[in-house]
Length: 429
Image (cartoon, rainbow, N blue to C red; front, side, top):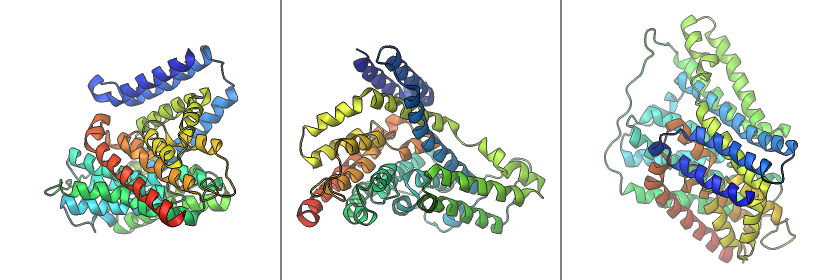
């Protein structure tokens, strides 16, 4: 009974999140309630749970939350110091088509280096400097989600799932790039090209928004310094992980701590700047609501994982037999359920073999990286990048479903088709 009840509660909670605007209940509140209720059902009506297991899930979730919080704060520091003007000043065009291509391609390649979550946060900050109209900015932000997830899928450090597969030895850095770069690029270019024919006109840039009262005065030298330290801190995260073997959130916290010290020293002599630009003031502007939403969603999925729902799902998929169909379905499911436990379940079911599709760099693992990475774009809460953008821009779930999901689905299947052709007839013949 509890097994079915947990599924029903998850579906109801998911529906309430999707209908946030019509029912006027904040999605973060729903997500937190969903997590607690679903764990309560498992504990009271199910077999119970070990406290250590809950702590383990909370620890894994917290790694993502602290990474998100650190990255959002670093980006906010750069933004408040007008650091992004280095990029926005060079983007002169206001033509919607040209701007969409510039933003999408920039996001695609940045995501492979920074990872899709960090890139999405950075690009939304840029969009706020480039586009004034909220609805137009939402559309560009939707394409940022597609581009960030597509860019993260072909890089060993671009997405949490590719990092998992890389660390466990299922894939190697060189082969994931060789096998998934073209499909990932296609998954972006197909919707991007289609949307190009729909967009018309120009965007309006926002007016310069000085602080009320005493405007904050920042020199170009200070802006440039904070920009390069901020971007350098984000780029340093994978290097830090490689050198120390510590998780990414430790690297992002190191970068945040470094920037905190530098900004304290930079503004100590200027009382106005210190009051408005020190990290204490900036932290108050960081959207903690999106962080709590993340906490609720991930812990709710963790409950389903603990109860065995995801394992049952994996075994059901296994009966299909065809590795390409299995991965396509996993990708579609990752738009509803977080891709991390789905990929973890698949890794647990299929050990690395000596030869064949399940060998290191086998077609199954490479296609799993593509599908789990890009499939999350189909719904806005299907990926870390989507959740972050949703929280920062307050994008409506239904709006994304109507305006972006079809394009994302089209790109997903186009890229999947290209991967299968390359895999069957070129690389794995």
